[in-house]
Amino acid sequence: MTAWEKQNPGAAAEDRARYARGDWTRHRKFFGSKEEAQAFGDSQETKISNEGLRGLALSDDLRVMAGKCAAKLKPYGYTIEQAVEHFIEFVQATRRSVTVAVFVPEYIAAKRQKGCLLYTSPSPRD
Image (cartoon, rainbow, N blue to C red; front, top):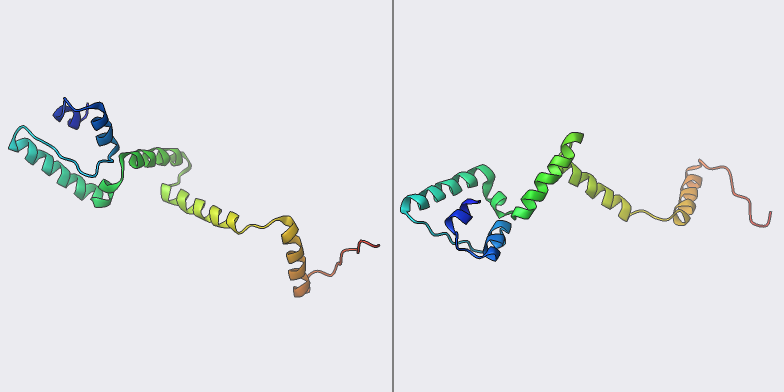
């Protein structure tokens, strides 16, 4: 049971789910005493200093996904950042790809221009 569920035992299941996903735009917490409120505030300050404000802005789903992806990459010795960079390079390379029918004439023309290609293909009439 999470701390939120302990503090809000009568909350609806939907509220618990929304809180867990982190998709509420505003979170209101109520405490039984000033000491509980102060302890919660102190824990949030610690969390902010450890994770930074950007870490708190990420949804729980995204944080969980990042953890799973990092675990999948760990046996291979790569990080999420390296995987993303590789994927971006892959996408850029595939977007500029051309078919063989377009590539071959361009390749032959470039080689002829450089003087590297002496062979000329036979004409269809030969």
